[in-house]
Structure formats: structure tokens, C-alpha cells
Amino acid sequence: MIDGPLSDNSAGDGPAGDGLRRDDPQPLYRQIKQRLRGQIERGELGTDAKLASERALEKQYGVSRITVRQAVRELVQEGWLHSHPGRGFFVARREETYELHLLRSFTAIAEAHGRTPTSRLIEGYVCRAPAEVARPLFLPPGADVVMLKRLRCLDRQPVVLTQDWFAARLVPGILDLDWSTGNRSLYAEVRDRYRLRPDRGRTTMSARLANAEEAELLELTPPAAVLTIEQIAYDPQGRPVNMTFSTHHPLRYPLSLDQRG
Image (cartoon, rainbow, N blue to C red; front, side, top):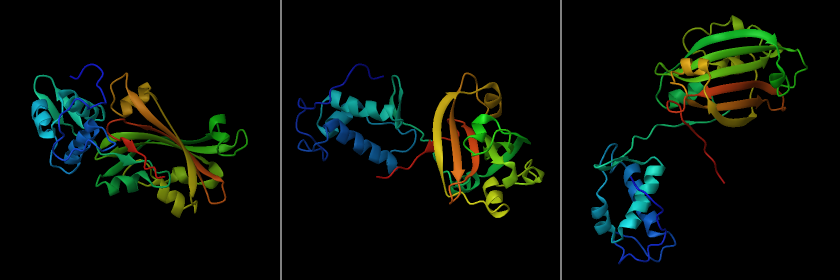
């Protein structure tokens, strides 16, 4: 375990080695961190591989113990390494992440990752729209909506609980389809059967403790945190297509968000 604040200043180190540059604007500890992370990403240091000792890294890079410790500390904090007290530091197992994409289905994302998607119907019904659904779907109070709740699985492990809401007039007969077995794609049905074409949308992310139903269905031990996503999809004319509330298992289905400047 690494205790106490660590300095960002490596002025006390001797001549830097192994390609480190003192005239680089990046501090020496960060240069070391980047080299170690690069070795992990390239597979030169595989999962569960033991990191060289602090003494060996000091000698390799020609820096002080505090500089090495700061580099290792940040790699631990970012999940690249984990510590075994008395044994050293080891390369952590990196969980695969899944893209958060409003216009791409769970099925398509799963198959792109080589996983087998399945789903289980929890419930489906027509009701009068609650206020929190009517407003974003641009519906008058009391309008009929369809709610479809499903448990989504990867390789038979439950990972996401979803609730999809539609204006009932847009998807007549959708509850007559067999949602109880296999992996019928809601995205494909909306596109091909009902000719609804989501074009853009809005996503809101949050986190909270799982309720009893979510903990049971997602196989979580309470108290357990879950990631929640609220999404509204719109067609090219800006009309709402559907609203989705999803609750994600934080370890089995971690999400990534690609951002570009």
C-alpha cells in the first residue's frame, strides 16, 4: 500500500534513464507511468504478471523511490495494477467495456463483442402514461402507452434491466409478439415492422443503490450500486419514438463513452 502525498517534483533524482527526458514537460513519474501502461496495453505485461520491484524500477529509470511510487500509485488508482501486500504489484484484469450508443441495439453491440445476447420478458402492458413518461414523449395526460420490461443477458448472465415506453398508437400489436424467449430485437421490430427510424436522442446517466427487484434480477448482493440510463429517441422530424430506462450491472456491463473534440 502506498501512503501519504507524493511529490510531482523529480528534481532530486539523478540522471534519468531508459529514455526518460528531464527536458520533457511531462514529469518523470508520468513518463514512467506511460511506459508501464504501454507495456500492459501491448501485452508485454500480461494479466496477473508481477511488476518489477520498486528497487528495480529505480535502477532502470534512474529516479528516486518517490518518483516510482507516484507512477505506480496512479496506475493502481486507474485500475491497471493491483497490490498484494508483502508480494508487490500485479497487472489487473481489465474488464471489457460496452459502448453507450443510443442508436445501436443491445443485440448489435453484444454480437460485435463476440457475446451471445438473450432476453427474458419481465412484464408488458398498456396503461395510461404516467407524467414522467407523458411529458418527454409529448403525449397528453392519460394517453395510452406501452411498457415493455426485459432482462438482457450476455452469455446467460443478466446484465441490464430495461423498461421501454412507446405511445400505443405508434406500435399496435407489439405486445402480441413473442418476447418471452430468445432474443427478439426491439430495435429491429421498431425499424422494420413499424417503420420508426430513431435519428438522434438524449441520454442522462446516473447512479444509485439497486432496489430489491433489481438486485434479485441482476444477481447483486445488497447494498449494491447500479448505473442508470434514461434515453429518449427522436425521429428525423424531432418527434419522440420511445423512452428507455435501463439499470446496468456495474461489473458485468461497464459502459464506455467515446468523446471527440
